[in-house]
Length: 261
Length: 261
Image 1 (cartoon, rainbow over the protein chains, first blue to last red):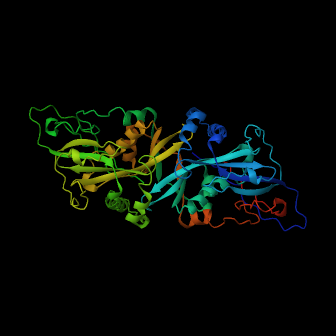
Image 2 (cartoon, helix red, strand yellow):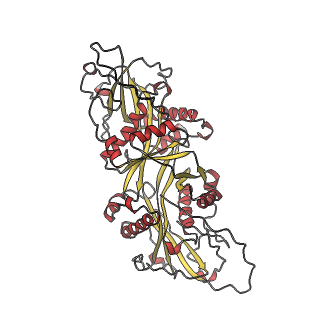
Image 3 (cartoon, each protein chain N blue to C red):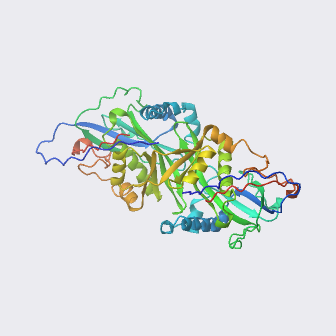
């Protein structure tokens, strides 16, 4: 799940100057991830788990990611966009000629160069550096009768934060949603992260304060979804009737489990 | 989004009786929906909007549902399971021989027959009655490195409520998740629906109280994802650099939009 801290208060735009201040250029690119990016994606997810202090919940491996991502065309299922950075322009030859997605590129002029202690770890075959990622997939609104996108994860490495990169990644998803005529982009935020919530609201997002996420996982999921298959027991609203048995041979007290949906 | 009211307090099991009380049998079946079910699905979604007092948000049409559902194999994307009921056993010939899903059947013995004022409206070609539906689709956990299911809607028509049908539908999704070795089943619930929350918790589900759903939709989505494509403006962290332009020809003040993800 994505957690975001806020941008600082906006500062007034500087007065036009006759000579521009010295800046450091940083070329950035958002492109579709491919299976060869899995080692970097795995490291990014682990860093996110560390940031959220949830490493005890982290069990993904490169193998599990490889076998579950990239199983369908982009945007039809789980999709990863990677954000890369380079001190020099991206060469045309390195632009991923993916027919599904034209990379988004942008030049930043930073007031200070970024010191990236992990630049070697996150170097790609193109010689550029992986900065962050967004993982999203289609969801569906029955009221609209059309799909949207759900953003599961949005992560930017620490030394690249507070430069608008998270916003760039989220914007790339919104742009793709508009392009595909999808109805919504949704994600979750921690309720105590008031600055992030304010930021999202200023962006025009609605925060649905009344809804709570419910999750069935681990042993509870196994118990609920797996352990009772095909059994018929008295007094249980969950058992399955075998159609090959004549119904009038099975009489059992049925506990009326009220469940109003 | 699914809203659920709670089951009543459990009553003690009756003492074994030598003669069983008179009951009314009701045969039920959960099966994969098909495109021919869209008119019934559309009516069910509208009833849900009425129940949630959200008809002002309802804009789905049979056409929009037909063009966006059933676009991929079941369980790979948006999937609808229908719950049907019949006073007589389902004939084998009417069982949907869908290779993706074996219908789940169950016999209920009700203490009172159900008076369904809309039985004609919800009659299928098989002569049985549509009772409710669940719409779900794969989601993804990066921490687990595997998919799960997200339940977008779960709805049972009014006269069939409080008989365990909602639970049957949710259980069918959980069963499918276990079968596919998925990691989670998730959904949302309204925070004031304390009885539903208790019911989910008793089922073993975790309620993630700290997370809030954020939604970008309508004009805000259009503005955020569509209106600025390809423009380069001064002092804006969202514009896209055109790679064909030489970077050193474009110098602009870059407002550092802090965004820590």
